[in-house]
Length: 137
Image (cartoon, rainbow, N blue to C red; front, side, top):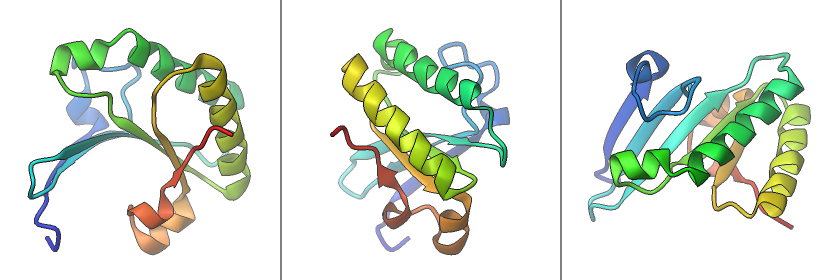
């Protein structure tokens, strides 16, 4: 409200059966349009308390493939959304950050990933202060 932004939010159920969307669907997709008309788009994935590390790696590589093949971009005429991963704890967050940073460097793909924890979001909400951008070293 303070920023006079327009917020659109879609749950996994809302996204079900969209032909051009990554599968499995993200937990949510949302967009924020500011008063200047600039829109930012995000995919949100929330990981379980005891995530399977191989499943997480596959999920990340699926996003890389999906972005490279231009499915989203070709079907929506919008840039690829930024991706937010919410982790159960700092151990998973740090491991995920290291893996994604290495993957971004190796794959040379232009995807922006943010990582946070359940606790950070629970305490502060989803805002820029709790979304830690993965940086390639």
